[in-house]
Image 1 (cartoon, rainbow, N blue to C red):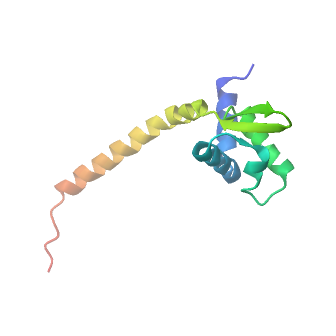
Image 2 (image 1 turned 180 degrees about the vertical axis):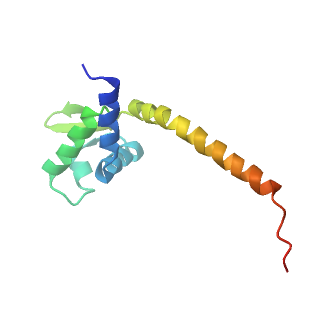
Image 3 (image 1 turned 45 degrees about the vertical axis):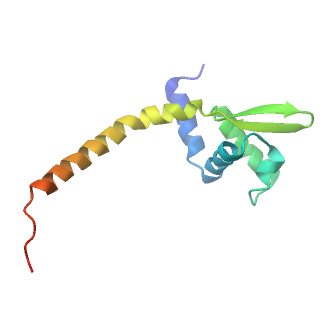
Length: 114
């Protein structure tokens, strides 16, 4: 059984790599694709891309479906909601900090130097 912490670690580790983020973008923008169509976007051998797809699959970010001899990958966006939930307190933190900065700046006298 995978714990919540382990699941989050896999998710963030998967998102930490630029190639994997680009794969997710491609699947988001262009829909489900076979491995070869995805591989055509990268300057790497197909086995290397397959390793990236494995990491994404284990993180729950993509699903694989076999269609004849091809493997079709599609985006599974639900885990991204977990990232958003995790980041939400930080977003509130920064929003509050910026609001406080704005209040401070509003209280400061204008610089009337000419």
